[in-house]
Amino acid sequence: MNVALWTGQALLAVVFVYSGALKVSQSREKLLEMGQTGVAVFPVPLLRFVASCELLGAVGVIVPRLMDTAPVLTPLAAAGFAVIMVGAIAAHARLHEPRNVAATSFVLVVAAVVAVGRLPGM
Image (cartoon, rainbow, N blue to C red; front, side, top):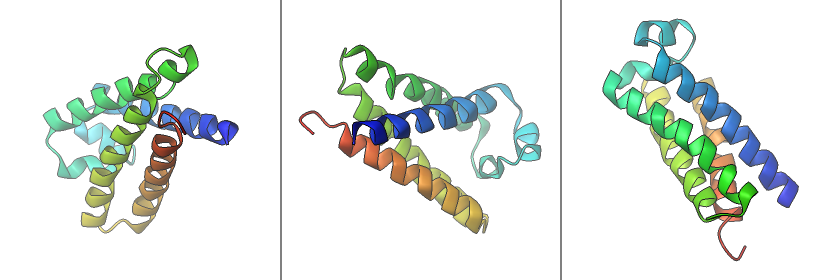
Protein backbone atom coordinates (compact mmCIF):
# COMPACT_ATOMS: atom_id res chain seq x y z
CA MET A 1 0.00 0.00 0.00
CA ASN A 2 2.89 2.35 0.74
CA VAL A 3 4.15 2.08 -2.86
CA ALA A 4 0.66 2.82 -4.20
CA LEU A 5 0.36 5.89 -1.96
CA TRP A 6 3.79 7.19 -3.00
CA THR A 7 2.83 6.63 -6.64
CA GLY A 8 -0.37 8.59 -6.08
CA GLN A 9 1.52 11.36 -4.32
CA ALA A 10 4.03 11.59 -7.18
CA LEU A 11 1.21 11.69 -9.74
CA LEU A 12 -0.54 14.46 -7.83
CA ALA A 13 2.70 16.45 -7.51
CA VAL A 14 3.43 16.22 -11.24
CA VAL A 15 -0.13 17.08 -12.29
CA PHE A 16 -0.38 20.05 -9.97
CA VAL A 17 3.10 21.46 -10.59
CA TYR A 18 2.31 21.44 -14.32
CA SER A 19 -1.18 22.88 -13.90
CA GLY A 20 -0.15 25.44 -11.29
CA ALA A 21 2.87 26.62 -13.25
CA LEU A 22 0.75 27.16 -16.34
CA LYS A 23 -2.04 28.98 -14.51
CA VAL A 24 0.32 31.24 -12.60
CA SER A 25 2.34 32.24 -15.67
CA GLN A 26 0.03 32.22 -18.69
CA SER A 27 -2.84 34.41 -19.81
CA ARG A 28 -6.39 33.03 -19.92
CA GLU A 29 -6.24 33.09 -23.73
CA LYS A 30 -3.02 31.07 -23.81
CA LEU A 31 -4.43 28.57 -21.30
CA LEU A 32 -7.52 28.11 -23.44
CA GLU A 33 -5.33 27.55 -26.52
CA MET A 34 -3.39 24.92 -24.57
CA GLY A 35 -6.57 23.02 -23.73
CA GLN A 36 -7.11 24.24 -20.17
CA THR A 37 -10.76 24.94 -20.94
CA GLY A 38 -11.89 24.92 -17.32
CA VAL A 39 -10.30 28.32 -16.78
CA ALA A 40 -13.03 29.92 -18.89
CA VAL A 41 -15.53 29.96 -16.03
CA PHE A 42 -13.33 31.50 -13.33
CA PRO A 43 -11.96 35.05 -12.88
CA VAL A 44 -8.21 35.44 -13.40
CA PRO A 45 -7.44 36.43 -9.78
CA LEU A 46 -9.09 33.21 -8.60
CA LEU A 47 -7.09 31.22 -11.17
CA ARG A 48 -3.85 32.75 -9.89
CA PHE A 49 -4.81 31.96 -6.29
CA VAL A 50 -5.70 28.36 -7.14
CA ALA A 51 -2.46 28.03 -9.11
CA SER A 52 -0.47 29.16 -6.08
CA CYS A 53 -2.34 26.64 -3.93
CA GLU A 54 -1.58 23.92 -6.47
CA LEU A 55 2.13 24.69 -6.37
CA LEU A 56 2.24 24.78 -2.58
CA GLY A 57 0.16 21.60 -2.44
CA ALA A 58 2.60 19.82 -4.74
CA VAL A 59 5.31 20.48 -2.18
CA GLY A 60 2.98 19.57 0.68
CA VAL A 61 1.96 16.24 -0.77
CA ILE A 62 5.58 15.04 -1.00
CA VAL A 63 8.01 16.85 1.29
CA PRO A 64 6.46 16.48 4.78
CA ARG A 65 6.08 12.72 4.44
CA LEU A 66 9.46 12.33 2.75
CA MET A 67 11.28 14.31 5.44
CA ASP A 68 9.09 12.92 8.27
CA THR A 69 8.50 16.48 9.43
CA ALA A 70 4.86 17.39 10.04
CA PRO A 71 3.61 14.42 7.98
CA VAL A 72 0.02 15.46 8.73
CA LEU A 73 0.47 18.08 6.00
CA THR A 74 0.53 15.36 3.31
CA PRO A 75 -3.11 14.25 3.74
CA LEU A 76 -4.14 17.89 4.14
CA ALA A 77 -2.48 18.77 0.82
CA ALA A 78 -4.17 15.80 -0.85
CA ALA A 79 -7.53 16.85 0.61
CA GLY A 80 -6.94 20.35 -0.76
CA PHE A 81 -6.34 18.84 -4.20
CA ALA A 82 -9.64 16.97 -3.87
CA VAL A 83 -11.42 20.26 -3.19
CA ILE A 84 -9.76 21.84 -6.23
CA MET A 85 -10.87 18.89 -8.35
CA VAL A 86 -14.49 19.30 -7.25
CA GLY A 87 -14.34 22.83 -8.68
CA ALA A 88 -12.66 21.56 -11.85
CA ILE A 89 -15.31 18.86 -12.31
CA ALA A 90 -18.05 21.46 -11.90
CA ALA A 91 -16.39 23.74 -14.46
CA HIS A 92 -15.97 20.97 -17.03
CA ALA A 93 -19.51 19.71 -16.45
CA ARG A 94 -20.81 23.24 -17.00
CA LEU A 95 -18.85 23.34 -20.27
CA HIS A 96 -20.26 19.92 -21.30
CA GLU A 97 -16.83 18.25 -21.45
CA PRO A 98 -17.34 14.62 -20.38
CA ARG A 99 -13.75 13.53 -21.06
CA ASN A 100 -12.39 16.33 -18.90
CA VAL A 101 -14.93 15.46 -16.20
CA ALA A 102 -13.66 11.88 -16.29
CA ALA A 103 -10.00 12.94 -16.14
CA THR A 104 -10.54 15.33 -13.25
CA SER A 105 -12.67 12.71 -11.49
CA PHE A 106 -9.72 10.31 -11.69
CA VAL A 107 -7.43 12.91 -10.11
CA LEU A 108 -10.09 13.49 -7.42
CA VAL A 109 -10.12 9.77 -6.59
CA VAL A 110 -6.30 9.65 -6.40
CA ALA A 111 -6.29 12.71 -4.12
CA ALA A 112 -8.97 11.18 -1.87
CA VAL A 113 -7.11 7.85 -1.63
CA VAL A 114 -3.87 9.63 -0.72
CA ALA A 115 -5.67 11.86 1.80
CA VAL A 116 -7.27 8.89 3.58
CA GLY A 117 -4.26 6.59 3.19
CA ARG A 118 -1.85 9.10 4.69
CA LEU A 119 -3.97 10.01 7.70
CA PRO A 120 -1.98 9.63 10.93
CA GLY A 121 -2.37 6.13 12.28
CA MET A 122 -3.32 4.59 8.96
